[in-house]
Length: 200
Image (cartoon, rainbow, N blue to C red; front, side):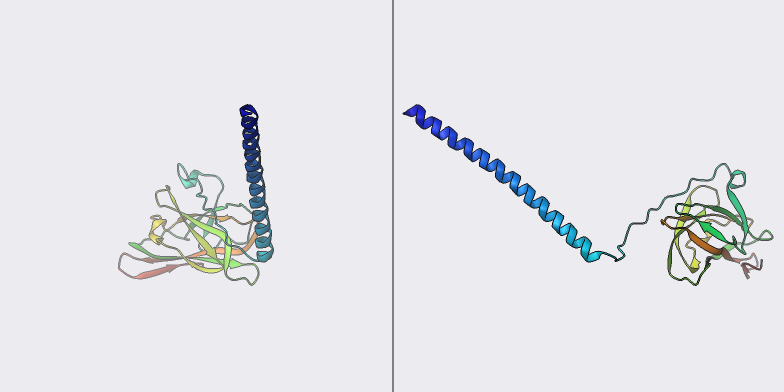
């Protein structure tokens, strides 16, 4: 009798363990199904809407030993680059130089003028990079169509008034530009303000 009772208890415990396992499996499947349904509903509700994404900020390599010795950097004056077609992931670089060397004691402002081919306004998938005077280290700003004020304008202007820049298209579509030009405002040695733009 004792052996029979013990066998019955053992079988009962094994059944309880099996039921517990099956219940755990069923619960896991139910949770997965619920997640799938909620994901499907969310996707249906936001379908066709613009969802904010994180814009990658990839710093271009430091130009060494000097930008003048680096291939792939296009020369440009403050009048602009002219027409550009920047493919997805494109990264053209430019050396902006005034027509004549500039003498100044400080930099007041730099404005980047981004002119579209068509009548566009607002944000773009373009980022503007400007290289430190020493050739080491970049700063970046996101570009909008029209005028864009550069933070820390003194950061990148060299002693001759030139600036090394890069424009990156982080989007998935090609961006066409009529031109990208600069306006540089400096304070001269006598304290007077001087403007250098497309006409200089």
